[in-house]
Image (cartoon, rainbow, N blue to C red; front, side):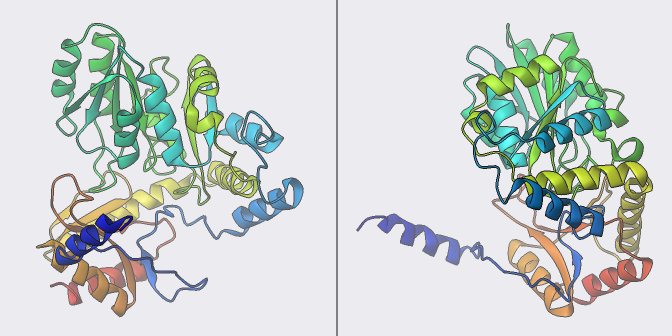
Length: 375
């Protein structure tokens, strides 16, 4: 029977308690949200939703084509200019998603004859970009600049080191300055995904590269998403203008993909401008994460100290992690649940989002519910 093997895979997932299910949420969920990536609480901000609505009224419901045909509007160009300026880079290129931006950047900047050195804890989109690239690949230990040095010494020719800036599982930050130093010893490029750093780290949320003093460097390329701190949808690549021009001409997920919907571009631009006016939102997100961590550890939970806005709480087993997250939801709290095979270290955990708009009372309630539902 066609696709009969799917039934076997489904049974294996069921036996391992690894079945994923979709859970449509209502417009006004009663749950206290510590699961989304809306770090600055901007997804429903009136200025952001109005930016989306105004863009849709002006430009229509969709981009109507690929970026090189009809999918680039004046709004896209405006967003790219302001993103590059805010983060301190020469140029930016907007994609339909952060995933597409990572596929484009890694695959295009790791051509045949090159070496791609990838952190073992990287996000799936970076890993898939490495798989699509034609260069040779080496996976190195997590957040280990010396391992990067050793890998780069094995190769003569073009090379690029690929890493998240803030890793999505535990929320720990990469040692960017040390990675940049290792790259410069071998004239290698550094490509980092700042999905969880934009809006949280750096001066007023300008990102991890700015915080590390690397923004605008001619050997650094940064990818970002518009779907987390900016509360919208889409992604972008930031870097030297010649790199961005190369992506326009060579990146398949840019050339052959429909452009980002105008509503998403309008929402992201409105959120970016709001962040410029209210830079304290970034510091507030970090403060909430620190507060969550302190309260959780004081209550006896095994949590990982956050470097940005992600707080990870270890669970005894995959099954108990699933039960714990489900019991939290029943109690009125939405949390993330990460377990094998989605985690590179095989350790299951709850993943909590520290949002800038969480109140002290909401933080206290979240910690209380996590404790009451603990397996």
